[in-house]
Structures are given as structure tokens and as C-alpha cells.
Amino acid sequence: MSTIIILTVVSLSVLGVILAVILYFVAQKFKVVEDPRIDQVEACLPGANCGGCGYAGCRAFAESCVKASNLDNNYCPVGGNAVMKNIAAKLGMEVSEKLPMTAVVRCSGACGKRTAVVEYDGTASCMAKSALYTDSSSCQYGCLGEGDCARACKFGAIRMNAETGLPEVDEDKCTACGACVKACPQNIIELRNKGPKSRRVFVSCVNKDKGAVARKACSVACIGCRKCEKACPFGAITVEDNVAYIDFNKCRLCRKCVAECPTGAIHAVNFPQETNKQIKNDE
Image 1 (spheres, helix red, strand yellow):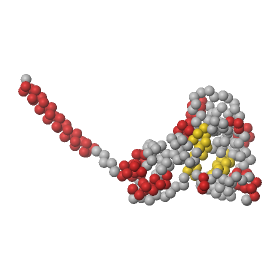
Image 2 (cartoon, rainbow, N blue to C red; image 1 turned 60 degrees about the horizontal axis):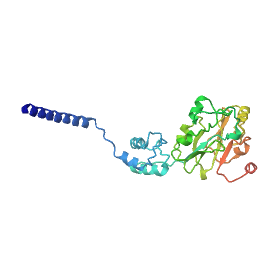
Image 3 (cartoon, rainbow, N blue to C red; image 1 turned 90 degrees about the vertical axis):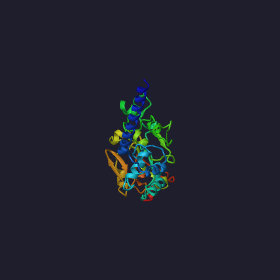
């Protein structure tokens, strides 16, 4: 009996050694050697894992940077230019600075400016609300007011204004990660250049209805009258599908369009207080 036990133990030991050797060679053959620079780049990142860079997380972004021949298509919106310079130094590359951006809410249809037509009593979610119908107001393009964008923001940069029913962006906290843009089913949130001294000019409306219909739905809607387009000396404004849009890459912040807009749909942010008459006189 003892002989059988000994033979069994020896056989199992030999088999274990053989399997271990096989596993070792298999592991050596199929092992993935990871570039140590990936850890170095990841250590430079803020660790927000917000997806604003276009990748699943900071680790995936670090791998992309290491494998890329240059950093032109890689940018961490949370870390900004400072982090990208650090990454470039680690990888022996050069990187050009990008202008800071911020989220902009392109809807001014506060509760008192849009005509209410139905009462919504469902789940407090813009996505759910948009799946059922457009909105409780007569504007089918405006903000749904349920705060999906605020919940999506990991940096506390968006809050819902209880009085207006609209989201408000704190540009000092906004990292331009784009999470709010993805969360909005109405596509009213856009990432735009922050602008010099945080000054921006944009059309705060996305209503594509014709002028009379849009104005009936919301008193501050863009009516597609093209006055702003004609007033812009830089060709920064185009009107398509009955709504104006300002290209922030072409806009020179002259604000002539602001003075021309008959509904107040064009917003000039962080400028000194001036009347439309003064702006016209500057022409």
C-alpha cells in the first residue's frame, strides 16, 4: 500500500513539474511586453477617467500617446496644456498649445419664455423625456430641464437653475471634457473656445422652425432673419435650417450681430456693460 502511495505522489509531482514547464514556455511565448513609458504618461494624467480625451480612461489615453508618432490628435481636456507639455517631455515629442474651451448652453428658453402645452409627470430624465416626446413646452428643440447634463458632470461645473429651469455652466470648474454634451439628447450644449478674457459671442438657440413658429414657441428664439449674418464683417455667421450659428474660429467678438438681433438670441458673455446703441455707434 505504501508503495502505491509513493508512486502516486511521485507521479503527480512529475506531472506537476512537466505542466509547470509547459505553462512557463507558453507564458513566455504569448506574454505582452508593455512599454514602461505608459506608466510614466499615466502618472502625468489627472486620473479623472472622464473620457473627454476620446478614450475609455486615462490608461487607454496613455497607451495612445505612447504608440502615436506625434501628439497632434491627443489632448487631455482636464489637464490641459500643462499636462500635455509634461507628457511630450516624457516621450521626447513636441506639442502645440490649444485654446481653452468651455461648455456653452445654447438655449435661453427659461420657464417664462416658452409656452407650456402639457405637464410631464414621468422619470426625471431628459433622455426618458425625449424618448416619450419633446418637451412640456411648444419648443421641440429646447432644454428639457431634467438635469442629465448636471448629473453627467464629474467636476460639479453644471447646476440647474430652479428659477429658469435651465442648466448653468461654471466656466472656472468646467474642464471641457464633453460629458454634458454627450448626455444632452437635445444637443443644446456645445464646447466652444473660452475666448480672450473668457469673452464669447454665440447664438443661444437651436430651434430649426421657421421664424413665426419659433417665435411663438419661445420669445427669445432665433427666427432666421439673417440680420446678424449680414452685419458680421468677418463671415463668422451662417444661417442654416432657419437658425443662425457663429463660428468661434472666425468670430472677432465685435458684437455687431448682438446689436442687430431682434429677439436677443445672440449672447455676448463677460463683456463690459454696453448698450446695443453704443455697439452700433462703434461701427
